[in-house]
Length: 287
Image (cartoon, rainbow, N blue to C red; front, side, top):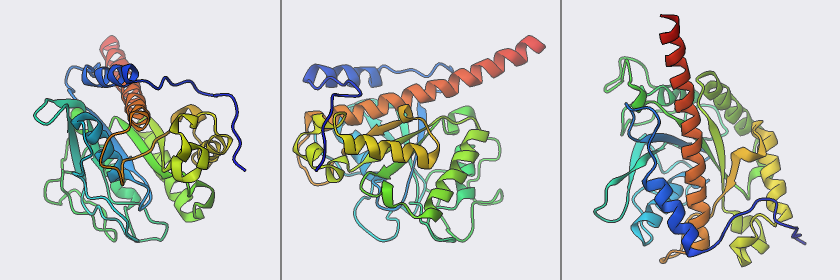
């Protein structure tokens, strides 16, 4: 039996909150003047919902459910290219100050799915949009479109692991090792990271019944703690969402969770920009 407790995180569930979150995202500006959009990389196992997450965020701002990125169910990754997606505020609206980068899914077997070496190329800004992944051979410097000296705006400013809440406790050991290897690379490059837990309604019947139970569900909290220990990340870096996969109309509570996740991504990107600014001022002070 799934248990409920007093809320351990507070979230306001009303239409005003949705508007407030949307406005915060629309008016966000990176603190570094050479960058106009924060770039967030989405990585995760095949079927965890990376492409669906982008489609869901796009849907919230379009005002109806859309499906721009290829998403669905398959044993291997439906995403075979590196894609950078800009979200627009409305049908003919301006692009939002965030770019979501989608990648091939991670697989637990060697030589399948996204190569860990390719992730370094993406984080450092070397990989061009629409690059076709080759699981048996990572991107190399003489490949077509390879950016030899990328600008700050082409690098990744926040890395988001997209994990399926129904599979956290049964994650294959090899996949957990791959995620740890990626985490080490991102740490070395100073890229802030967070975990987005999808399919929370499938993981917990109480949440399926009412999404506002999310921060009262003991099972969801335990799942988040398990993800936290598997990736070696604090609980504050883990946010749950429910993607749009079968609905035709938007749902207020789903929107609030999705928008809250984007706000966290932008806050983490700010941490990255603050580090860059500090490094630049240290260099200038030394000169």
